[in-house]
Length: 442
Image 1 (cartoon, rainbow, N blue to C red):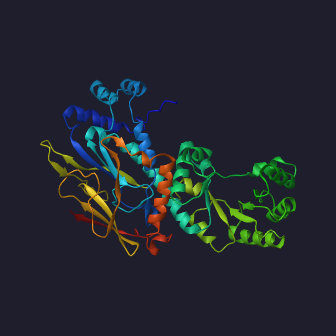
Image 2: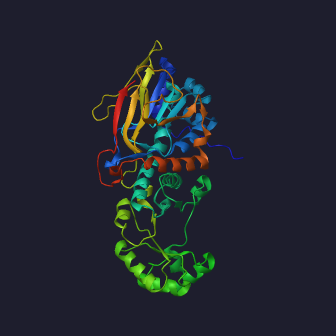
Image 3: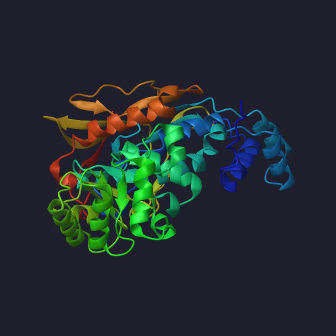
């Protein structure tokens, strides 16, 4: 069995220097509550999508400081000997509650609430944000594309447009938010996402003629494969495809041109040749707006790459990790919050609910506790759905959120909660959040 790789240095230096100082001044053991939330939704979007939670929990399992990590910190003089001894035995023994993966969120929604000592919790900031900010940005873009596509299937094809491991994360987030397949084989292996892919333009260019390339692909993959018809001339490509494959050809792919016009021309030509069942897939730098513009076109499926893997103009979800409550020197709990201009936060331990009336989501209700008693589960609230679930309790991670089963559960949950959105939330134009966030003392 392959040994786990430590994730402990996937962090910013200032987290360890704060830990070092806190161990010296005696505040490291103070119990604290941190929230992960967004002050606003990027790009004027109407909702956000939580993604990356299962990945984060798995990375938390491996957040250990081994000999190599400790040696680096010592050699670089990042922390002193006392802090190195603390890190040598570091294990997160606190608790994390949060929104289920696939859930929708709005400004102020406490996606994660991390409770533990300052020493335990502060050094998780970068790991949590680096995972959730990217995955949630991709998931929000994917959800918008899924809404624009309607019942037409979407495939994720962005691996060549981002980092190699970000590509795997992007495929996972897209699948949770409504995509049906990915071109990335590692995502297929790791997360159980269906994979797809046939041939690129280089395949056609390799052969002496387009007909030779098509014939070879058909021999290898059968007549239900999809032929790429725009390496040269599209009209000729369609004619050659049907001449070689016959009218039972599974599909053709278009990767260039004015897609609404080209798709209509290709459909007419296929129908005229008797290939009425041959599907048309389009790619070519699609985003949610291009997909929406193709709604009336005879397109059967979409492949999306660059826009998806980069968050379609919003490459980060803008999430932050802030201290919202702590114990004082006497052990009493007090709320704390930033008051900086445009960066103010809401102090206090929070419990989140989605107010749903007649099956339609109406409001995000955040109850701010007047006391700071620990709750294993959110307190009930009339006519509202509790949004937070236990993810880590006293250091024990809920394995149900991890792995392939966690991905499938998140996908199913996302479909359910997206169906609760009011119709105005499904528009792609820039606007205010679809639901208002209301704070209430309780």
